[in-house]
Image 1 (cartoon, rainbow, N blue to C red):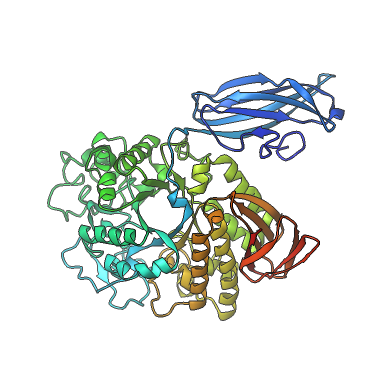
Image 2 (spheres, helix red, strand yellow; image 1 turned 180 degrees about the vertical axis):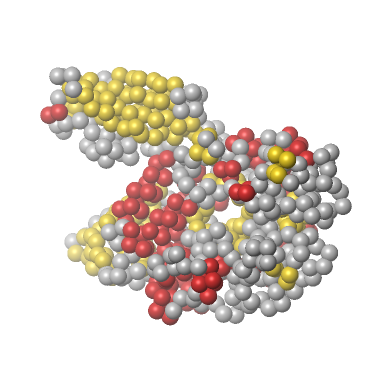
Length: 615
C-alpha cells in the first residue's frame, strides 16, 4: 500500500517532510482513503526502536474531504530521539471492520552537526598502491614479510596457493608514491578531486590490510615525508586525499601481534606482559585468538580496550589525527560494520577535531540505515559516525539494470535508499562500479553469465573476446555515465578508465597498463569528468525520475539554476520516450530527438546513455 492512493510515504501530501528527518522534527502524516470505503476512524502507531521499543499510538482526526477522499492527519514528535521509527496505520469502518497499513520506516538522525559536502560532489579515484605505478624496482631485503618483487610490471599477480595451501599475497610489483606523483596531472585530466588509497601503512602483504605498523608508510611506497609531499602536490591541484583505515584487525606479522618475531620488542604473541596483549582476544594464548573471518594472518583487535582506543583516535598523536596532520583529508573505514558504534564515533570526533572538514566514509555493503551487525542495529548514518558509505546497493542496481533487470527495480531500490538515508549520507556516498573487492564491471558485462561456477584457474586465464569486449565497453560507458550522473561521488577504480579486465581478487588487482590504454574509453571518462566538474546539478542537485520501465531509465538532476535530463537504454534495441518539461540541449551521448508543439520524442540507441541540459 506504500504507493496506493490511501498512503504514499514518498509523496509530501501524505508524509512531510520527505524521507529521513533530523531529531526534533514534527513529522506530518496524512491518510486519504476513498469516501466509498466508509472509514470513520484512523490512528498512527509508532515504535521507537532505539528507545527500548517504546510504542506511541496517536489518533488521526478527520480533517476534511478532498477529491472524493476523506483526509485524516496527525503529527509525530521526534524530539530527543535518534534511531529508527517503525510506524503503521489503522483505519476503521462504521461496521467495526478495519485494515492496517505498514509498517514503514522513518529514519531519525542527529542533525546538530553540519557535514562537509565536498566529498560527494566531485570525482574520486581509487588507487591500489602496489599496482598503480612504480618509479623503481624496490629491494625487499630487511623488510617485514618474505616479499618477492616482480621484475616486470606486466607480469600476472600470483594467485595459486603455496605448498601449504595458502595464498600469501607476498608478491609485490612496487607501485609507489613517486609513481602517483608523476601521474597527478593525468588524474587531474580525468576530473579527479579525491584520491582514495587502499592501505598505505607498512604490512607484509601486497594488499596491506594486515597492518604491521600504523606509524610508518610501507617502505616500498616511500617515506612518511613522501606521503606529505604527495598530499601537498594533490592539494595544489585541487585534490584531496582519503586513507583506508583498517582498525578491526592487524597483521599476524605486525609490531603489535608480532607472530613471526620480526619486530625486536615483544608483541602480544610473545609476551603476556606486552602492552599490546590487551588489544587481542586469546581463547588459549598464544595459539588460539580471534581473527577476522577466521583468517589467522589477520588477528582481530579488541576495540573496547582503552589503550587501543587511545592509540587509534583518543590521543593527540593518535593514528587518525596524526595522518590528517600529515596531509590526509579523510578516512574510509574498512569493515565499518564490524567496529562498535562507539569506536566509529570516536574516530569521527577525532577526525573533526583535527580537521573540521575531514570526512569519514564507511564500508557497508547493504542499506546502511537498517544494517544489523552482531545483533545490533548500527548507527552508521545517524550523525556523528559515518558521513557517507560505500554505495554497493547502487553498484548492484546498475549491474542488474544493464544485465536486463529492468529500470523498475533500479528506481525502487534507489528510491528506498534515498528515502531511508539522511540527505548528507545520500549525497556523500562513495559510488563505484567496482572495487578491489569485486570483479571488474567490464568483465562482468562483457562475459555475460558464462563465468559462473568456473574455477579459479579458468578465471585467471579468461580474457574477453573482441565481440565480448565491444559489447562490454558499450555497457560500461553507459554504466559509468549513470554513475557520474547519480548523487554521490563517482568513484573510478584505477584502470577502469582504460579498460582493465579481471574477476575477483587478485585478478581485479593487476597492474595499470601504462602504454597499452584503451584510448577511446579513456576519452569517454575524461568527458565524464568534465561533465561532473562543470555541472552543479550533477554535483549537488536533487533527483527526480521521469522514466523507469524495462530497459529505459531517465531522471532529472535539478538545482534552482540548472536542470539536466539523464537517460539510459540498457536494451539491444533503440528505445524512445516523450518529454515535455523544457527545451533540450544535448551535452553527451548520441541520442536522436525531435520536437513538435513542445513535446519531444527522445530515442536512445541500444546500450548507451545521454545527458541533456534543459532550458
